[in-house]
Amino acid sequence: MKNITLTERTLPVKGEYDIIVCGGGPAGVAAALAAARQGASVMLIERNQCCGGIWTSGAMPWVLDHKNKTGILAEIRTLCLERGGMIHASGSLSCPTEAMRLLLEELLEEANVRIRYGTLVTGVQLEGKTLTHVVTESKSGTEAWGAKRFIDCTGDGDLAALAGCSFEYGGDDGNTQPSSFIGIVCGLDPEEVREYLASNGGKPKFKALIESHGVFPSYGMPSLFHLGQGVFALMSNHGYKVSAIDADNLTRKVIEGRKELHAHVNFLRSLGGIWRNIALAGSSDNLGVREGRRIRGVEYVDWKHLGSGGRCANAVCRATFCVDVHAPDPAKGNVIADQKVTTKPYDIPWGALVSAERENLLMAGRCISGDFIAHSSYRVTGNSVPLGEAAGYGAAVSIRENIAPADVKNVPFFSTEN
Ligand SMILES: Cc1cc2nc3c(=O)[nH]c(=O)nc-3n(C[C@H](O)[C@H](O)[C@H](O)COP(=O)(O)OP(=O)(O)OC[C@H]3O[C@@H](n4cnc5c(N)ncnc54)[C@H](O)[C@@H]3O)c2cc1C
Image (cartoon, rainbow, N blue to C red; front, side, top):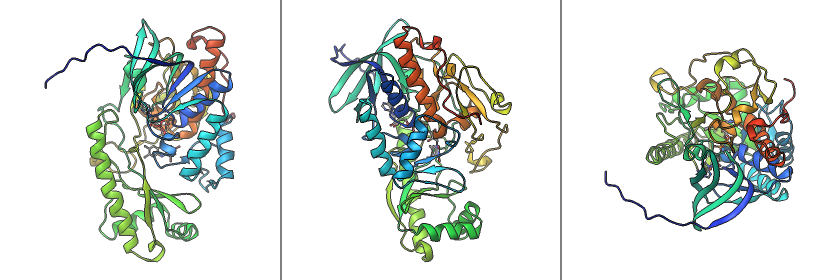
């Protein structure tokens, strides 16, 4: 491979903030909101043209593990329900994707967060163990932004990796859970679909229906999710050996996923009956990536902690979701892998959100510090939001009290006791 050497460049520092949040998914929105509500000046940098991450550009606004959560997640729940969302028999919360895009922006604008869309975090400037700036690429070119604290909410841990932090990736064999490329479908009558699934055994029957016609989706449990107002998400494919941090690999998985998604919708329409008008109205802007880097923190959440229902004095939330590993190897099944442990509700400690190696860096969402099995449980969005809220709150307190994030005490517990 040939190399080129870039000429050394001087960059404009386009802004200085108390806190910069990188990534505007469920965790990033909550981090930015919580920090701004504590009086910090906050910038939120997002590569897409909307906030919400998996909820919007990922086409899956379905919130698992939200029931026992307080704070910003409780606010979002109320707003979703006011704007066409629903709570389902399973207890999950959903919201039409477009309603979600708008409501998150409204919350951030109201809190005076500066949102910068279409901007990818691509570099950092360090002084010793402290981050001084992030470098971004966008239509405005290459720019630098300074802050006292930085919060990595990129899901994949991009910021921490750029800052040279250690991380874990995948399971024992280095493989991550498969990706899914999700479709937004319309033209279905929610009542007819509900009745069909209720009277035919739910997801297994949907799978059997598809397979009985010789169509074998790469995700062995194809699922329809009613988001509200007649809008559904269809998750029917798995992209195996996906890499969240390899653009060529991601491109290939998107192309394969899109092909499969169209084939499945066309097939369903060909069945007629309740499927006669089904249409693919949209698809995710970004491939649904279940896991990327898990950044090393001051504390670490492991699978034993889940099995024992671990409690922590410095807990920021209590996760109740099960271990949910989508099998990384299709040779061992294309649904959910054997679960190593049965989860009991467990606490996530503040230290899992604080970088072990950079003094003013925090993480929230799926890139916090934990092992492969633990991640498969705490990764769901009902946990990402309280983790983001804790990171934003704690970052603001650390500035106000002029202490390191690792030394912040009494970050609120954004959950009820169960
Ligand atoms: C297919 C699939 C289905 C899922 N189903 C559910 C479900 O039903 N319910 C549930 O609760 N959870 C579900 N999850 C899990 C959940 O989506 C994630 O774990 C959750 O999104 C984590 O939130 P986050 O904010 O950490 O990350 P994300 O939602 O991934 O958000 C990260 C944000 O950072 C931005 N970003 C990334 N890199 C950069 C960069 N370098 N510069 C700037 N911006 C950047 C992204 O564009 C994105 O907006 C699912 C996940 C997948 C992949």
